[in-house]
Length: 214
Figure 1 (cartoon, rainbow, N blue to C red):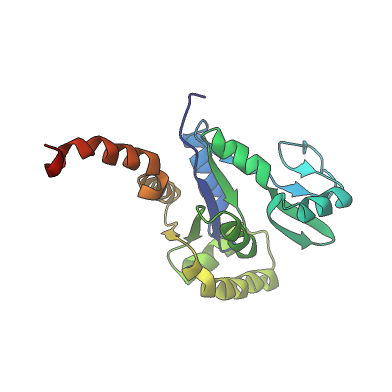
Figure 2: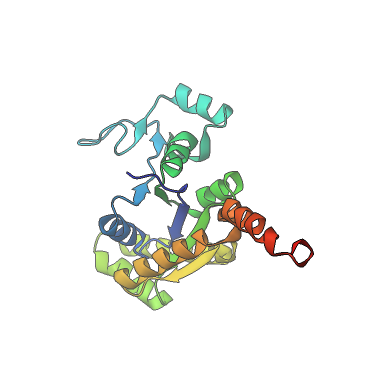
């Protein structure tokens, strides 16, 4: 790809059933040369069809724990006897190449990433109402009543932490949600903190117009 400014890290969270994966897929399909999905490292074995470096980075438990000790992970957690985490190097290399990196992750990991990389954009995606969330969960037809109730209860807990995100985006339609996220990324690029060199250069150029130098 052509030379670009350093990319932006998007950390996307949301309730189960909010449509995070669909929105992320939409962004990737619209701009495959702009967005890159973050690849996680895991200690579990590959499933049928999964490839190392494409779906996950498959590593041993010993290697993963070494990565933890050496600070090579932006976040990590342990689920059902296996580690999962986000390798810092993959994210940094992708950002340096000019890609906007998307990390779809739960709240615990999102806050770890924000602590490690304060410049990351934390985006929370939600359906327009609790009733719509329940409708979407039931519409999937893949979960029992007990599982649906558990996910709704979990959503109630997660809602308490929405204020810790930088942006809150309603997913009423996938197209509109994806467009709003793209607008947020563009606005983020315009922040002075991301354009410090350009701002400094402009100030330097304008010094010739100071009254005392005329």
